[in-house]
Length: 322
Image 1 (tube, rainbow, N blue to C red):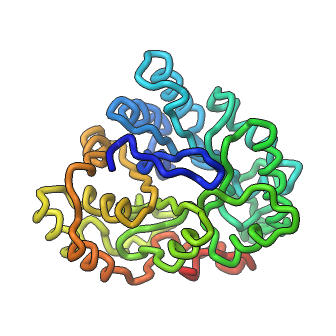
Image 2: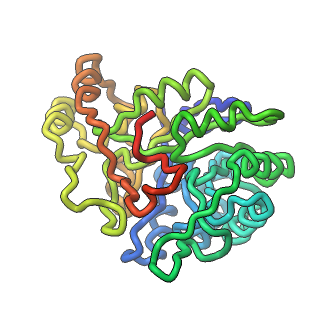
Image 3: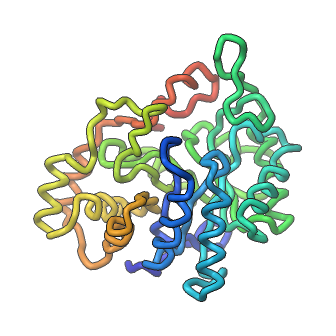
């Protein structure tokens, strides 16, 4: 493997094995995403992961266009992932949501568009609609109807590949077993780190030709709105730290390399230029079978993304590994 390594998706397109994540908690200015994305492209990232709900598509789009304009990267070498938010899952809203993202980005197409979560909330532009009691207002479009609208976006040339995120096995099978299925999901993007290595879901997705894309591989951003602040810190795990010292690498580099060797596409996120560069310097060493076994043993099916306020939704996907 090297920085140019790609995995061939089930529709024939290719996805780079490392992507740059652009999410940041609300307390951070959106302009950070623009500057960090420029740095990421300059040091060699070819895969940029963003989403409508992050609120920074325009910022990330400016960074991409600048780096395309100055010759740092060609559009054909860039892989951009966007996401369909929970309030746009009714079929009539899917294409307009994608077109809105394209306008924000000022791109003609995205390389990958994924359903952000199988959960759905009240359709509309309020990303977190609540009732008079402050409870989220859920909705229940058949996800298979949403998927058909995604397929139409692919046929229209607005996106090259389509996939899902935060789906468990049963939810993926709903799509795979849909009568008249035209395109299988190419990927499932899920939380994935040494404390949640998603072994069963990885094996299932592999058996169906679906690539697993891992977010929070370095641990979470510890956003107070989503994450228990008493959660363990991945990069301080003593086993990970010991293996990193053995290889003269950072714990983050070892965590990334571990999942690359498992066949997972890794999303690495940082706004620190030094760390952005370090996180792709993972192709000059190899974890031994013993290293891999030690790291696999750290799995405890622990989730940072508990999303407790969603837990009563009938499609809640985060509670089980598989």
